[in-house]
Image 1 (cartoon, rainbow, N blue to C red):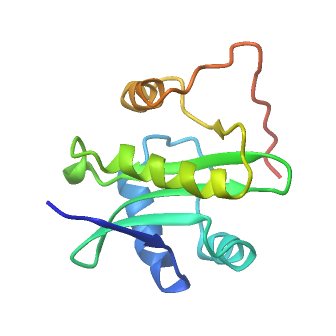
Image 2 (cartoon, rainbow, N blue to C red):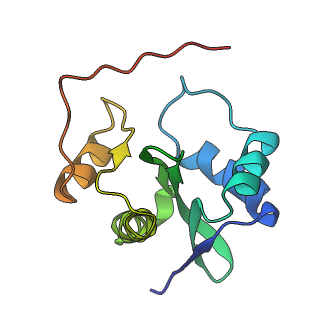
Length: 139
């Protein structure tokens, strides 16, 4: 099986939103929308890395840099494509992008009850930082 990576474009927004809806495992997250994804791509055209097979989006990761910190979001692989190394390969591509931007440390957002995700992050060398707690406020 072959898959390729590339930076997402505005033409991918509908496909990304559909994929995230299918692949996401967090019903409590804010709803993604076209305007927000378009704004991200406008600010940082290389931030969203997609995996595709024969033109079909099968995975994604957002490798963002806010000018201060390096963050990973939306590591998602379509359910039918899981357990084929796509998530690990996306993670390596994201790390390479952030390393090229100067990252010495990367933060990743991972749900507590996402055991599959926890396993991937741990196997990839990431460690849980227990002395921090995430605080959020919906606007």
